[in-house]
Length: 363
Image 1 (cartoon, rainbow, N blue to C red):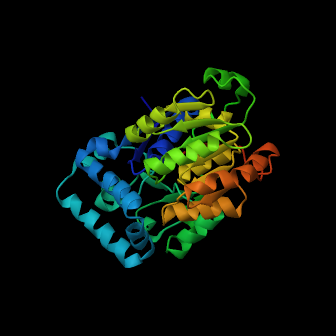
Image 2 (cartoon, helix red, strand yellow; image 1 turned 90 degrees about the horizontal axis):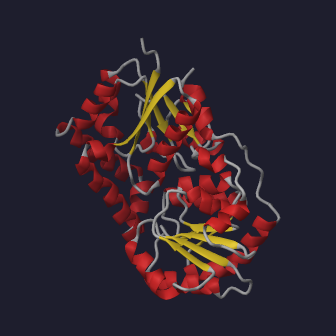
């Protein structure tokens, strides 16, 4: 008889962070929990029309950030948003049918946006299952409040207090950190990694993950200023599947021996490991991954709302700095290089948050 405990992790895109958190939990379980059956699924693969919701977030947050700020910071607006999503359960039962078919002992959600659709019904359908939410930002929002959720796993004590203020019972909130893939904790030879990516000099490496809000012109200007920086550096640009950014950068900087360009990578941890400084958006997973590897972070144009709070957390703890104008990147880079060189970032626990989360849910 198979007595393996069954854990189902459900994510949904809206940025890449929610999916990466789910993958981190899955990969940790594969490596360390052979007696647990763990699956991870993007709910938009179960119910494809939901992909438009993730696209809607990307459009609003990047094209109309002030609108997203109003939705995020004005509770009545978020309540309306939540109720609109809840009405969709009247028209589609694909996700509930999928969950019922799996009959998990533990159900983990890394994205709460869709929970109004099926969370309450899911608890009624599987009353003995444990429902869990992983908060993937450094801020707790009232949207997270669902009476049917058994546990909330959060990044910091501050986030726990945010959720308590929002009306969530203290006993349900566990401070674990945000899940980071086990690959980030594997010690590697940095010289060999640099050679793998054809970086054959001793200059510092600045990795730019171009998922932030930017025009092509401003992106080119920023990269040009980095390559002309008074101290010679290597510049690595990862465009996360953005073909326009990729082609623009390729056309402008191809052939420069200190410039490396990738449109997509499944080994983001290797690039961050070889970096001295990372330039990116202030997504919760990116922040957590940089902290796990002790890499200073320059955050470009944080989106009002959760990214603002993530950026504030980074700055308050001297882990990096935010810039609202891409021309400022070269200005703040020297200080970040010093931060990296002298390892002045506060020492962080090296225990993977995934381990803490599974310790709670597999008791």
